[in-house]
Image 1 (cartoon, rainbow, N blue to C red):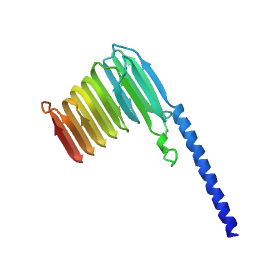
Image 2: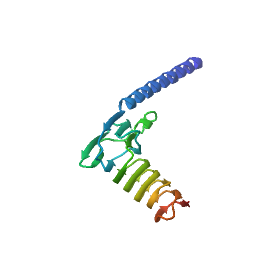
Image 3: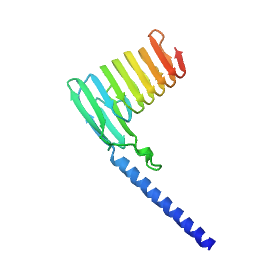
Image 4: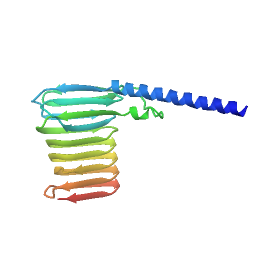
Length: 217
């Protein structure tokens, strides 16, 4: 009798593992199907404005003169609108009304959406990036003004050049490396790490609850 119960228990475990693996595969397929890419060719664009309700944002240098807007992860719950408004590229993301986060064990990793913007190498006037919840990374960007803000998430800037550079978050770290210009770094809860700062530029860094580390050249 005990042997029979043991075999039944083993069978149930095997069936459960198979079910989870199949669901995992479906989740991967769903995430892959959600990947999107838009290409924008416009040499008159001088300003960039990104505003998302949720999701990670990555801004990097484009390999050519075109803008590339790539969406990956679970993009179904947030509608992304891309518009060329005069000399400004606008990317706005709004979550569907009633959309909720899925915290199930095997599907959690696919609920985070990611927006990657590749920008041509040129001098911009104003670059503004905002996310209500998500990590923001920016590298190899030149502009008169750069503003990066998130309510919950990490802010990371590398090799960014501007007259004024601002990075802020309510909950998360702020990391700057080789950022040229007047720097403002703020977080309510989290660490601030600034590396290779040129001391000829003004610097303001503050954290309500967290360490502030500054390394100058």
